[in-house]
Image (cartoon, rainbow, N blue to C red; front, side, top):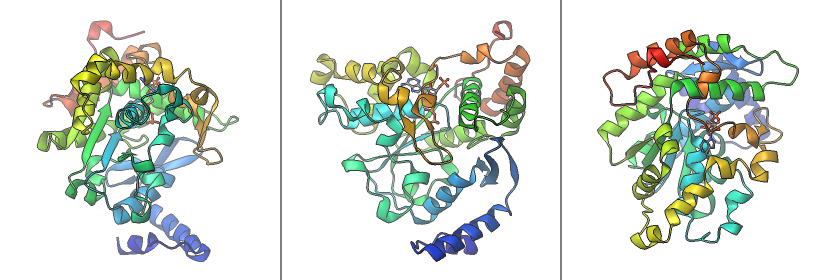
Length: 343
Ligand code: PAP
């Protein structure tokens, strides 16, 4: 990794940046490569996880330069598992005193992703580590074993959200179609499933990602909290209360009596956020090749939407891997009863 250390030395000069790009390309060429679900990018295997080059560059830079502060709180997730929701909730919880009047709340005009820096994209050096306006929240999709060391050694709190791999797969497939250029041939559901099952997906393998945080939560439950999308969707209050306690912003009895917890749950609900103009009409990272409409992050927000897309055989294929990977853990089984598979 010596050459890579050099690659990511902080240097703002144009010439060095160009050199960096060339060296990064060279590094990429040494990694296993596969089709990235879109003609836009291939993906590359680094430390057991599949990345697009744009993100991998940031992951390596973060591993080398990011110095976490012990007070930093990391919102972690495998893509398409509830990241946007978790960001909105955590942001609303932490800032609730400042924005007790919801009519001026930043989430009314800013999509949740823009409220919280994304480690491997927005925060790659010590200099940039200070969080937005004193909010100690950062987000990342990096699996636990590849997180920058200072996050673990600094004892930072980590909140991890995940969901049924079948729904995450369907959600990701829709997202990649939205991301693909308008005139491009979209990846079929069947081809995407084959890649997903091989582990080749955005920050995949999906199951290994979840397991990395599950193991960490077993080893250090005081430091790593797991949130289950389905549990939150069915009954958000207990999980959101737990989240607030865990990140050190518990709701007082008085606040609960006044309905402050319920107010945040309602404010951050799919129904409310997806109906805001900013999330219906705004754009995320405009001008970037990975830019997309904000609405792509608010599709259905449903448990079990996979039933509208996957054949029983496809669902069984995913369930088989889930059973193998999650067997022996106390993670939700996510294996659908044989009799209820299907559309
Ligand atoms: P990301 O990894 O690209 O940030 P992420 O937010 O993790 O995406 O996942 C998007 C999913 O969360 C979408 O699921 P779907 O495709 O099955 O519909 C999206 O609809 C859902 N989602 C977004 N916001 C909320 C919310 N407030 N409550 C519940 N689900 C939500």
